[in-house]
Image (cartoon, rainbow, N blue to C red; front, side):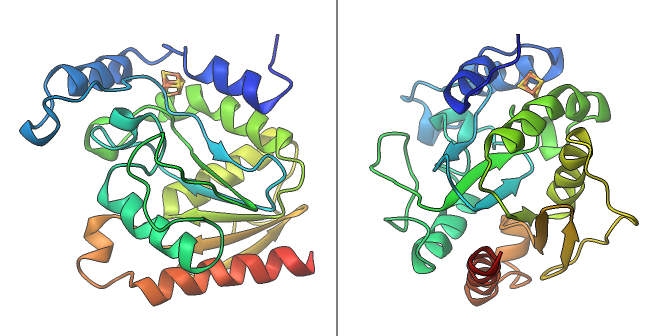
Length: 228
Ligand code: SF4
């Protein structure tokens, strides 16, 4: 029976073991953590989305990090990508604090919901096509339950593609597949899809994505949500 509420969907997601390779990887990360996390108890399960249920903005990533979301149990929490993203969400008024370090750190996001296309940490941040397809129904249902969402911020090309697939799962198709780009915008059915480079270290350490660029995307998301 499909979940009919976000809490029920979350409860369903965290018990999923549909992808054997990812189950093994998430548990292996917990069994053999880097020394800086050696004393921590890892979440080592699928990482659900979180945020405000009546959010107008959905921020979508690729998948949790093995020693980030897979450790803390909250996506974009406890890793460098999350540090970068939440500092920007704070500066643009979507979060009450600039850090996201643990599931009980007091973070509250407003008018935003944060999720990933794939809910388990994949080796090399590279889920297989089957793993993505296994996980996609969760995003489809999440999007359906987030009834106020009008703007989807896709963090990277993978999330851009995942958002379009989730929309198709709801019967919403673009006439032509819009091309991902940083600051690209595409109206697809009721949703405005807004692209951003992913806040990975490859992008943030090299200056491909800077804090002002991330702020600009999130400010644009708010602007679009206001006028929709
Ligand atoms: S990636 Fe998704 S479908 Fe696969 S085990 Fe994790 S939660 Fe389940």
